[in-house]
Image (cartoon, rainbow, N blue to C red; front, side, top):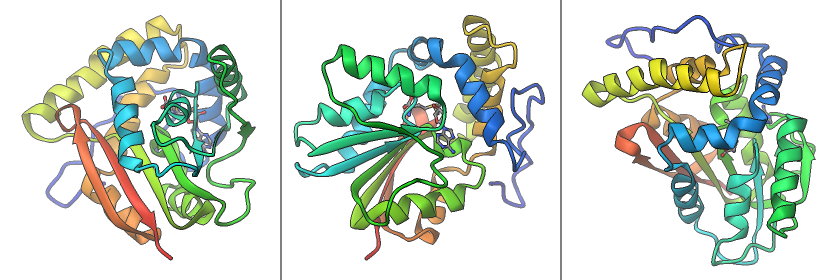
Length: 253
Ligand SMILES: C[S@@+](CC[C@H](N)C(=O)[O-])C[C@H]1O[C@@H](n2cnc3c(N)ncnc32)[C@H](O)[C@@H]1O
C-alpha cells in the first residue's frame, strides 16, 4: 500500500504471476507446485538459515495455552505446523491446509518422517471448507501475500476462529530507508538469481516473490487491515532489520 508521498513500487515485470492479477489463484498454485521440491532448501539459503527461528517466534507470539486446536493455512511443506506441534504448551491438535497438492504431499512426508500425526486437507484459504468458530489459533506463514483478496482472506480466517482465538501471521514486509534499499536490492537481484536457478523455475517464481513483497502492505497497514477484518489487540513485531513481521490479533467476540 502506498501513500501520496511514496512512489508506486517498481515491479520487475518478469514474474511467474502478475501480483496485481485479481484472478491469479490457479497460477499461484502452479508456481508453488513447480518449486515445491526445492522450497525448503531455498528458504534456508535466502534467509541465511534464519527462517525456522522466525517460525519459532511466530509460535511463541501465538501464545499457546495447551490443549488448543490449531490450524495452519498455506502450510507449504509443513514447517510452521510442525513447529506448533513441538511447542511446550502442547496443542490438542494441529491441522494444516494448502491449495497446492505437491506441497501437501511434502508436508505429509515430513510429518511421517518425524513420526507426527498431522491431519492435512486441500483448501483455498479464502474459502475454507470448515464451520464457523472451530479453532483456537490460526497461523499463516508467508501465505497472506499470495491471497487474491487480502481483506476477504483475513475475514475468512476470522470466521473459522473461535471468539477470543488468535491469528498469527508471519510475512515479509516492505522495508523503507537505507535498509529498505538494501533489502530491495537483495530481494530483486540476489533472490531471483539464486531462486530461479536452483529451482529451475522457468516461470520465474522467485521474481514473483520480489514483486509480491513490494506490493504487500507494510506492517502498520497490515495491522489496520486486521482490525478492519474483525481482530482486536493487534500487535506486530518486526524481524530481520524490519524486512519480516509477525502480527498477532485476537478474533473479536
Ligand atoms: C511461500 S509458501 C509458505 C509455506 C509455509 N507456510 C512456510 O512457512 O514456508 C506459500 C504457500 O501458500 C499456499 N497458498 C497460497 N495462496 C493460497 C490460498 N489462497 N489458499 C491456500 N494455500 C495458498 C501455496 O500453495 C504455498 O504452499
